[in-house]
Image (tube, rainbow, N blue to C red; front, side, top):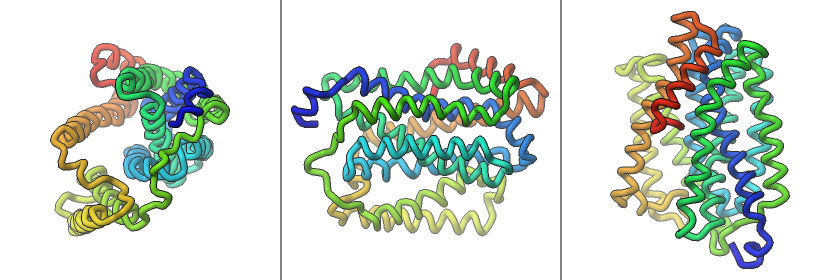
Length: 320
C-alpha cells in the first residue's frame, strides 16, 4: 500500500467490512450444519447427507490459492467485492433449491465464493498493517470464526424450527450487503506494485486437476466408493500424477500459483499438518453430531444448536 492510500484510508471502516465479510463466510459452516438434517429430509436426499458439506469444503479449498493469485493481479478490492456478490447470489440459489442435486451444485459454487472472501479478508489485513502490528489485527479478524461458531448453531436451530431452513441461506443477504457497501466505499485497490500481470493458467489447471479428485476421494471414499474400488484407486493415481506435474510446472513458471520453496520450510509444513488434523476433527463433529441428535435421537434443531453452543463454550480451542 502506498503512502497516499495510507493517508486517506479509513482503517476502522475497512476492518469492520473485512471482519463482517469473514463472519459471513465462517457463519455458513456452523449455521448450515445444524439445519442439514432438516434440509436433506425436506429435499428427500438423506442418502446424500454429506455431499452438500463435501461440495462446499471441496470448492472452497481449491479456490483459495487461485483467489490469492487473482488478487495479486487484479487487486484486493475487485476480488473481494466480486466474491461477496457471487456468494450472495449462490446463497439465494441455495435457499431456492428444489432438490438435492441443485443444492449440492449451488453449495459448491457458494463454497468457492466463500473461499475467495475468507482468503481476501486475511490478505487485506496483512496488507493494511506492518509486520509489528499484523499479528494483533489478524487475531482480531480471526475472532470472527469463534463468534460464528458460537452464534451459528443456535441461530441455525432456531431459524429451522420457527421459520424455515431456507432462511439459513437468505440471512446471508443483509449481512453480505452491509459488508459489500462498507468495503466498496472505503477499501482501496491494495495491489502490489511488482505483481505480475498475468495468471499462470497451466498451473491453475494442473492444480485443480490434482487437488479436486484427491480431496473428493478422501471425502467420499468408503461411502460412495469402497477404498479398494478400482475407480477410487485410479482417481488417486491420476491426482498424484497431476500433482507431480503441477510441482514441476511451478518450478519453471515466471508467475507461479504457489512458490515452490514454501514446502521446504519446516514451520510451514508442520503448520499445514496441524491445521489439517484439527479440521478433520472439527468438521467431523460439525457434520455428524447434528445427524446423531436429529435423525437418530429425534431431537429438534434448536436442541442441537444449544448442544453445539455449550460444546464451543467448554472447548474453545476447537472453535472454527
